[in-house]
Amino acid sequence: MALKAQLFQTGACRLFGKYLLVLAPVFVISSALGLALIAENKAKTALNELTARVGTQSAHIANALNRRKHETDRSASQDLLATLLYDRAILCAEVRTGSGREISLMAPAGLGCIGQNKAVNITVPVGLNGAGKLTVRFDTGEVETVRQSHREFSLLAMLFGLLVFIVASYIGFRLVVGKPLRSLLLAIRQFDEKGQVGHVTVSGNDELSEVIHAYNTLQDNLVAQAARVVEKSSELSAERHRNEALLSKVFQASPYPFAILDLEYGTYHNVNEAWLSAMGYDRDDVIGQTAQELGIWVDATDRGRFISKLKDVGSVKSYETKVRTKDGRQLHMLMSGELVKLGGDVRLFMVADDVTALRKADAERRRQHNQILDAKVELEDANDLLLQRTQELEAVQETLVQQERMATLGELTATVSHELRNPLAAIRSSVHLAIKKTEGRDLGVARSLERAERNVVRCDSIISDLLGFTREPECQSQLIRPDEWLRSTLNELDAPEDVALVLELSASQVQMQAEPERLRQAVVNVFENAMQVLADVPQGGERRLTVRSHVKAQIYVVIFEDTGPGMDRETVAKVFKPLFSTKSYGCGLGLATTKKIVEKHGGGIRFESEIGVGTKVTISLPTERIQEQAA
Image (cartoon, rainbow, N blue to C red):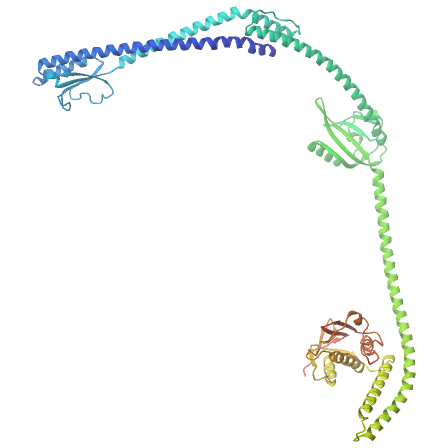
């Protein structure tokens, strides 16, 4: 039926519409123009007749006024002028004097032509030699009435002619076009309802003939296309069967477990052999059952989250969960799902990947990794313990070696000092005697004798340093105030006049157990070293030794800081080694002895130096805090 309506629109209606749209407007327009011209002519004729009538009446009144001499008989002239108003078309009349400004007569009386500016005027001369003017204004309303009546008549005539034309056209269309069109519609109905193919014969070359020829061609094309569609449909049906068979083989042969379920109820429609093998079921046990009925999901909430996510995005990839087999085993599976529309139903295609062995391997790997970490920790602890024991053994060994060396050095020092001091005593006595004998006599040997005596004293001092380093003299420990003791000791020492000695002692509130004489030796060694390096400062340079003290965490700290030339790192690393010295004299035991004394008191010593800046020696000793006592 759609084909019939389409052909009717494109053919018959097009022909009928063309027939009306071309001829009807021509007829309507020509009729309208003709009737409009007739109406306009009638209106002009009526206007001319009205003007002639008003003009004739005005001329008669003007002649009458001339005979009556209206200037003298105004009342009779006014009545005569009012007779013009008997004609309904005349609105007013006025008689003006020669100047045209003064109105001598008017009708209606008292009003004249006030407010009648839009009316048509007729002017007639009045009086002697036409000195006055009679002006008559009349309405053309009856002319418009004539024009309107003729227009209405013309419109009715035109509508009647159009109706006659439409009826005639319809009758002509039915007679000329109806028969071939009915044949066409019959052929369309038979083709549409019964599928019968039949051509419609028609003669002529008009639009209807073109429509019928187009229908015959369209019918032939539709028949040919239907044959091709049937052929293609058969091919597609065969291809679909082949694809279904192939997909079925792939589905069953896949090594991964596949399942097809109903999304709404979760009913299994099909599963492959891999699924049955992994889950331990027979096909008849699964098809038509739901996952809930079979207890497939170990955690039912996992299935709810999986389905919810699937409904939101349409597919889920690698959702890890646990499933339960028929014999109760639990497997780790990576579930993937996809929603597919089949006809009017929605199916869920699910594929699973068994990662149980992988998860067990991961657990075993983590267990072994933890064991390795535990073993590593135990090995590190054992290594630390071994390192500690090694360091302790090295310290003990170093102590034993040092003790052995000191014992050997002590025996050697005792022997050498005994053997050297006797000759030195004799030399000193001889030098002293020679100085006495030559005193007051200018023999030129005084300076040589003084140099000999000074070197004998230096040798005796070296022997004393050796004996002091190798022996541990018995000293009595006593409780002292370190700041008071340090100030007293430094005051006993002589500093050169060009060296500034600055004391900044701020630990008067502490006391400690110490051997004052041994500590005095340590302080003297540091002080003398500072004086010796300050002597090397160039002339004009700053020579200052600052001694500061403070308490930190019950440790008494005293710092000796000079402004000498300083030392490099290699020299600083060797300053505490016995027999090491940067001077051309001495035996290099001063700082080694100082370190030994400080460590014997349970303290420590640190030596810092920078070339061009100076040297800082820091001594730290344990203390006992007491309350400040009034002097």
